[in-house]
Length: 212
Image (cartoon, rainbow, N blue to C red):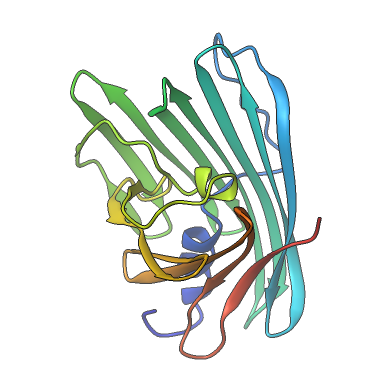
């Protein structure tokens, strides 16, 4: 991670959570589905719970939508209040579009990734970050999918928040890492289920831990 000054928690948590705001409703047009899976997680830093995260999956005929909703609130040289929502839509196993909305007490940020013709059109906005560079595809892995499927360590991942790609690397039994924009997330699986995410930091690791 780059430094840990007063502004760094915002970039850290937006990268860590990748995901969605509790207070928003985002419906996919023509995406009638039934609920197929829910996972609940707690967000922990310095041994203290500072937030919650809910992951859900729903499927249609040839579509899947992954939804991640999180809320974080703590004090670090000032109040940090972050809510994020991410919706990642797949069609025939490939990402068709993603939407991420970050709501903070330093502003609101929206990122979109949409498949068009032979590439993903990117319009990514985060705290002190923008990206509109198209990405070749199609691709079949993103952060929200990792909550429901264990990779093999040979996949290419796209960040719904930053709109950039990175390899998923297997670093041990049930352990995988993804590095995006200088931040490394480490995913841990047991019997194919995601049980923990660790975001490395020079001062203290942040964790997202499954609670059910």
